[in-house]
Image (cartoon, rainbow, N blue to C red):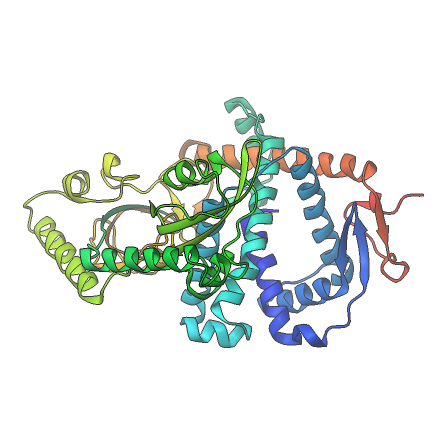
Length: 451
């Protein structure tokens, strides 16, 4: 139950629909967990995707898969009870990241649409709800295991007691420094976007059309556009600050907000309903688009900076501190932080795919040529050069060299034990009904079937 599972879960829904077609699946409810149903089509789609991914099952997949979905529903149910929410910004970032990952892996947006037999907006809409649920599951798990700590003595004892053939293998890890330049969007492009939004406001105010109609047709937040720009009830802290300031000051549902600039682009907003400290709004998002010549100019500037570094005019660290526009790394000499481990070391699959492809072919100390990438956080294309600061090749772990990795292994073991215990306790308090034809299984958690 981690991000990899969430990605796979999203992929199963997408790939399954491509194989079967929604109109051709005859559904039945095979499990009920609390008040949530698990459908046969969900299980079948997940099974087909798992086969495509090359997953090997040690038990009947028709037993394994519905149980995995049921476990996720336990976490989601508890997240609802604990009022755990995720921000729209987090969902958009995750959807952008997953969409870009699919495009990178499959080859192009057109090939992605062909592979899934869906338009990009349909793919994003499917990913959107899965991203929301996956983020809630992650936050729920983090809340459950957040207080677990281990001491150095526990780590040394764990390592000492391991048989030689069980000592963990530490995959190749790298440290990467980055300098970014955000291509300048021409003022006329920004004014063009604002003019379009002002025109939308005029048409809505005059009654020529509805906000929801224009959102469906033109909003570049395709996840909400399909629902007429409608966002779910959300607290202030889960929205972009500039967006929230305007949205929470709206009083009249018949009026349209002023134009708001957020980290995602420019918006107009319409109030739908307020409930205490939460709000439900519609919005239309338009993004100023970076012209090709601006990207080319940005990469040329970075290539020039890289040449100056190679020629000894200044160091990469100095350039990152002064010239980089990446605020998260600028004050750390450009060193990328790994949010999963709170260190600067990454396994290759943890890096953004655009960076991983470049770094994979580099030598330590080498500086790349300029390239473009779309960061998960902003979803805006930017120009980048990177330096490979260090590479530690894969090896058997030692306490002296790999204490942090071993600490994380012990922590993960403790977390897994706690989550395992929580699942078994939650089973006892949750209504579960399994179709008679789906009961003949050896489950990982036997408490599903109650006497």
